[in-house]
Image 1 (spheres, rainbow, N blue to C red):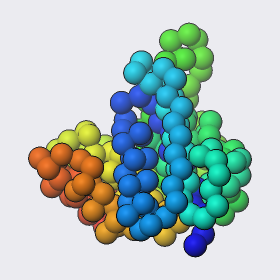
Image 2 (cartoon, rainbow, N blue to C red; image 1 turned 45 degrees about the vertical axis):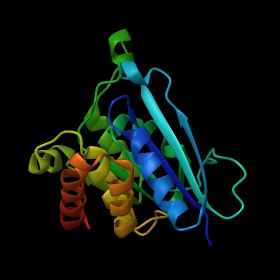
Image 3 (cartoon, rainbow, N blue to C red; image 1 turned 90 degrees about the vertical axis):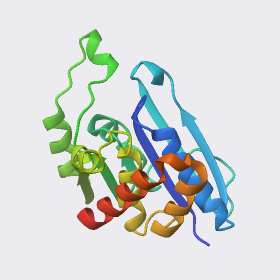
Image 4 (cartoon, rainbow, N blue to C red; image 1 turned 180 degrees about the horizontal axis):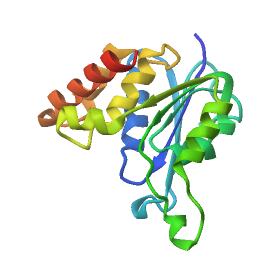
Length: 194
């Protein structure tokens, strides 16, 4: 068994923690060892959220070492740039194309989403930019972004789980009234991006 390291980053309210729990649950269903950790800080006020998910053999720490994440799922481009040091040289970044102004911008910090994307394009060998608004519009819900990004990550085969495991995790961890919309988000994301 290999070790899979996935770092998820975004801002409060985007579903980062739920996404990490879905990966962890699906990996445990495959009898993998799993360790997770979250740094949520000012998440409820639009602050950064970072989740570490490690699955596989001999995992003693839940924290991913720098330059070892096979997958970086970024709900927001500025957070992708901030967490890029965690990505392994052959890792993949899946990033939402819609920027969310961080709370630090209220204190005079500069934020230019075009600069963020330019930086990612220059520094990431395997970059997938996902149109999160399009997927949310197709599903008539802005609450499926996390599921769509997870689906794209699962389809890359660098995540510890595949599409079928993701769908099973959705059905177990998310209330039944939201199953159809989240499964639709998975199907649409996979169809469009991979």
